Length: 179
Image 1: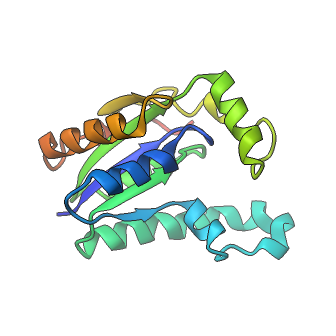
Image 2: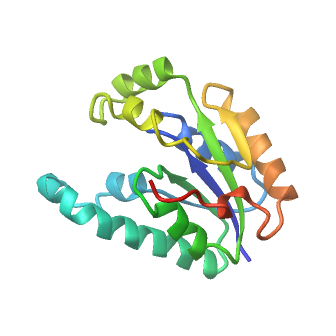
């Protein structure tokens, strides 16, 4: 049984910053996974951005199964995700049911999201605000964190929650209905 920290929130909410803080604060190793890892590492086809809509479902299906495969192989994981498509939450919950998951909602004020998005310069303008309008609706988290709190404070809370969480106890497995 692997331990999984599942960070959920809109683009620019601070998921990557929190993931790095958890990695630094943990006494045990975690593997960090996200779609950004694939994009930033050059694994996604940058020359074919016009084909993204066609390939996106297959890429995320593969990512979800890869996350499960890493966990099934015994790796502790930190996963950064945005459940912005119907069925993703339920699919991943089914794939990870044998593991200990802490589902973390990263809540960040809209003005902060917008400012971070502009500062990053690598996101479609307005995508963070568009995400924030719906990604938390109906979600029940094990832990809700403020995306502007010091990352080290949030990391300590994540690790404490993970140490308390048993297999199958996570609210993550209470997947909301498809939207």
